Length: 499
Image (cartoon, rainbow, N blue to C red; front, side, top):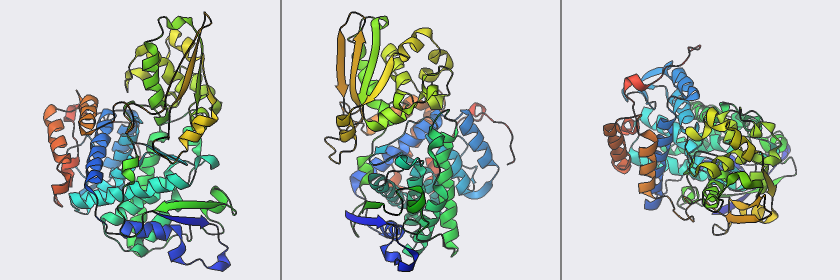
């Protein structure tokens, strides 16, 4: 890896394009380096993972609305939409919108956390949509997805968006644009302009994940994908973008991130170096914010040691700064303690999540968030006994660059009414690569079968899994086979809109 120093430069310095971060990102995307076998295998896993969570969410209102909007933009040689027959195609940017929303809705696909955080599986929908529309092969798709993961993860390693209250799609959109550039084998100059345009239009505030969290949490990555497709399209036509987007006097760094004196050090692969960042990411076993994954598993374990949950006086979760301030009591969001809060808010409340996991000993992507479940008197009572505290050691481990030390869990103290204290801790989720039960291909397949059971036919499930696992062999006219269709009567239609 090469480390690139990124800082604001005055306009009069006329920073060379080759010295700009967007150009260096574009150079990585244009590098024709081969994809290693384990990376290609992991890409297949994540395609299966995305399809699983998308179909599980297929008839939830945000997904229905996004699909309805996409249907309003038909294109005979376009891209497929989850749920619809593969022969029904739409314009690629709208397929990216619909499929991206479906993938993100349940908050159950993959994650990477470092200086900031991300769901790099969000790269797949727009790249696949363009691949289907432009008749690319399975191998082309693999190369492109490897690029998307690499760029987003490398940006997340180096540049914190959350510190400046910016949403994480600001690193996603340029990664999606870079991945599409790889897919189409575009020259560096074109990808450079597309990346800059993607950065320029994708900076938004974190209010989308604060307070009363709405369905926009699912739409935001899909919106980034739509913008990325449009950015590449414009750049291919010879259009430029605001430049230099990272280093300029009025750039995103100067006014939206660390300011004119900020210095960032961004790692990117050297020329000819394989793109392996996907191997540092990890998927979710449970449908909730990633920082809750290990704590859900810990709640299951603690449950075996507590005979009577009504005897709990209070629970303190000692965890990282990020967990405390984003999904814990440090967020100071009263909605996180409200039994009438939206699902999007509840899956960002570790107090709620830990209480339900402790009571039920299981986690279900629908039932664990049901209004009746959230409103149980005994659950609310337990929920309101839980608080989080930042622990410097857990914060240090959260930001550690050593994969063997990096942690996303915490230490829990359960204070009982008889004065006893039950404690336990867990650093990483069971499904994490260093966890008790790391996810392998069979686990991704089981997740797909579990989440899609009763929604699609077993024949369709088997067909998709066979095709997905044959991805490297798929020809230019076969990527539509990666779509998953529901029997027509099972697909809900939403309210009409403009489209």
